Length: 84
Image 1 (cartoon, one colour):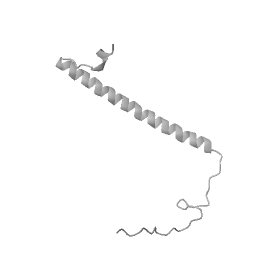
Image 2: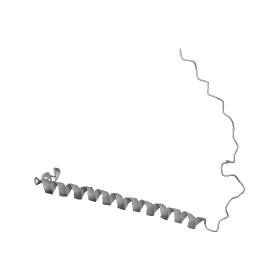
Image 3: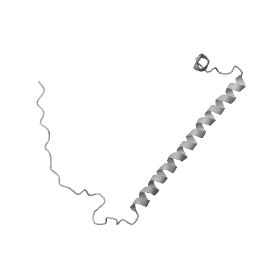
Image 4: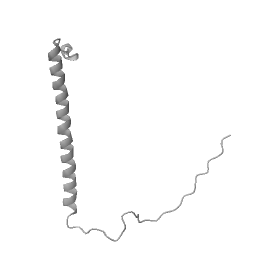
């Protein structure tokens, strides 16, 4: 029943092979082109959603951008047993 769908055959005519190969490459490029724009649209929608959710909230200005607030403890180097 499914034997005719298992192995697609290439056409024997040389020019038909070339045309179908170019059509396949064109289809792949079109899908890539569309997927890039869909990805850009999704990123833009996510950024707009985040900006919309943050509107009206105050922006924190008291801290520096490269500082982390918290309590820290220095941990010593692990002492491994010597190899014999």
